[in-house]
Amino acid sequence: MTPEQARPAPRQDNQDPAIFGQTPWQTVGPFFHYGLPWKGGADLVGTSEIGARPELMPPEHYVLASPSPKGEIAGETIILEGAVIDADGQVIPDAMVEIWQADAAGRYAEGNTGFIGFGRSSTSEDGIYRFRTLRPGAIGDGHAPHIAIGVFGRGLLKRLVTRAYFEGDDANASDAILDLVPAQRRDTLIARRVGEEDGAAVWRFDIILQGEGETVFFDI
Image 1 (cartoon, one colour):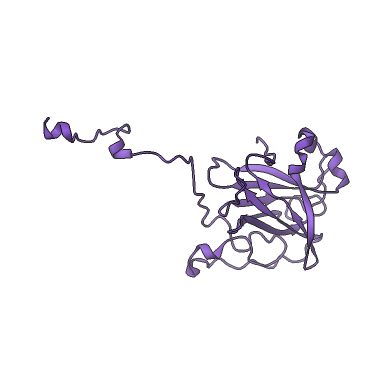
Image 2 (cartoon, rainbow, N blue to C red):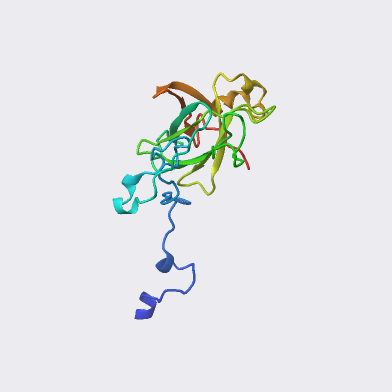
């Protein structure tokens, strides 16, 4: 056997493992969202800095401007929080949750409400996201008050979209979207009041990406 036969030169194509090696089993990830959540991005009604995770970046890189005062915003301030959980029941510490919603009068931002209705929150080391926002009003007949939610994370090729409705709201019974969901799975779209913090009701909405109790996601 010649030296060339024992150690052939790499083929110049993408079939040669000497050049490209083995691909990882994961489709994507870990999820990299540096710069996507911003300082105060999870506080839709105040000036706290919740939203980003400054411990994940050097202090000199955490130089985004502090949230600006938002002025008077009519409505009930609430806390919306929950865990993002994978198929094995483990929390996901590096996901990002995005919300958009109407204001307390059921209006989306149109330049005259003073309420943008959009925010982002990184999950903590405990897999928890957290928003300070308004309890939304109904946007019209057939639509119960709800908050639209997007989830970004490792292994997700595209954003997952769902909704959080409020337990005990009479309008849930006539909501056109909830009506499309099998009755046994509607609970996965219901936020539940679990307490109060500084005068604001705390609503819990866990997001389970797969497996038992999987949250209903929409095909959009």
